Image 1 (cartoon, helix red, strand yellow):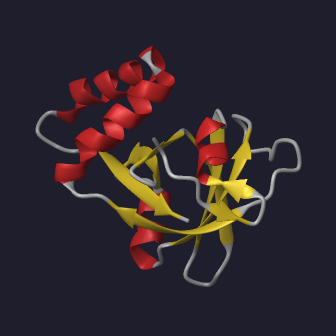
Image 2: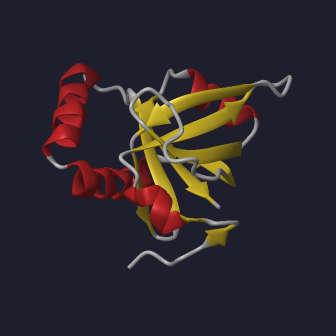
Length: 135
């Protein structure tokens, strides 16, 4: 069971139920960069799966500060939902199975296709990175 963490009116459970989450990472100069992502809760954190060479991975390496908000597939905030500030960390290889299980549990076959397709391209590399956001 995911613990309920409240930040304003937004909880981790509410974020985890959203089909997409708008993950805002920040450039070195403070410019926000919003990206709609799949996200699932586990162990009191919000897990995200992304390509290792994505801009958000680079920005999280520089600063773990993020903002998360429920959104649609295009990143448009849904229902006037409030945002939650959080701290993101990039996960190492030992934690990736936990992220995969959480996302596969929420998104089912859709995530398995994305993850399986990545495995075909992997060829000894790790093209995807897990991100954990703590509110």
